[in-house]
Amino acid sequence: RSLARLFTQDPEIIDYSVSLLPYVAGFQIFEGFSTIGGFLLRGQGRHNIGAIINAMGYYLISIPLGFFLAFKMSIGLSGFYIGMTVTLIATSSSLIYTIVTADYDSIIQHCRIRLNSENQSDL
Image (cartoon, rainbow, N blue to C red; front, side, top):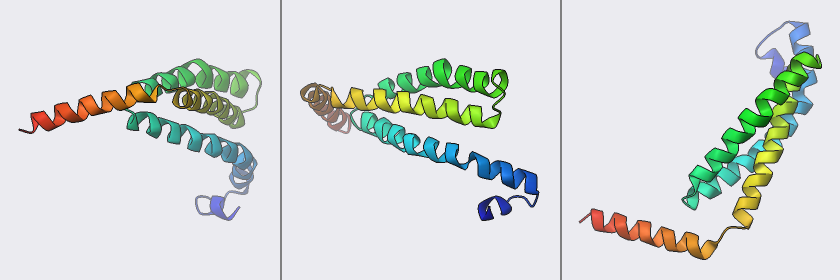
């Protein structure tokens, strides 16, 4: 409640904010996994895979599911958080699978090629 009071003194909004906290907490856990997975793919030079996974997750799962839960099931803002959390579970699982099953010999070879081409362009 004290965090919500930093932004408003309206008791109805404070109560609504407090009711959303469990959804926000679940969202943040999987957001962390997704962020780490995205950074790992960027480090491997495969950022395009992370972009595709995230775009598909948000456009195919999060937006339709969030709207369905919020408006058709009349859950409200909690429905959007549930939709985003489901998306983050799917995207972080996909990112982790992509990282775990990667061909690291090929990734290292591509990295060496990029490093050599960058070093030659500096001359």
